[in-house]
Image 1 (tube, helix red, strand yellow):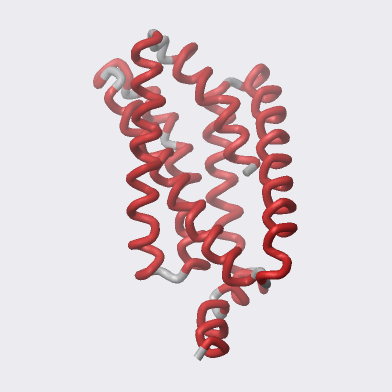
Image 2 (image 1 turned 180 degrees about the horizontal axis):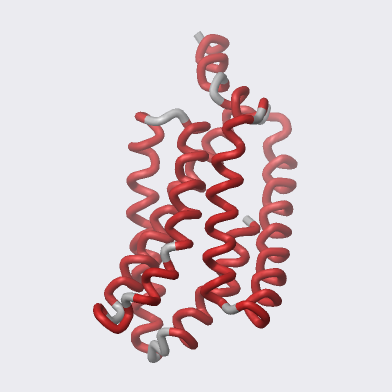
Length: 187
């Protein structure tokens, strides 16, 4: 959520101040992000059947982080290709955000006992919003001093590195056994 907050702080600035999109183009970019999210919402459940949710979270986090960092190359290709790479990048962000949310929600429902789900959802949402707010504040503050593209690249690379680093944690290893242990107790 920290990286998402940073992205939310920088994406509008990137579109309006770096690429100088007009109102119509901005609306199209937001629509393309929504279409990407819809595609991700349809693809996510299909992929979660093929990829364990714990692996899917890590994979999605790494790919989303690297995709965020691509803005550096999108910016440098602007003169050659115009806004087309920006449209592709924004749609990819929407798609990958959905693909990250789906396994998180799936695992959350599996590991949280039914009697605690209401409170647990509230706590999870609180931490999600808190992470987003902190990301917005940090991303906005850093954008002033080092630039919106650079902050987006740094946030993306950090997200990919942290996601990759989670593979070495005990919590990740425990997640890999969640589906197996739940299906054995249900049978």
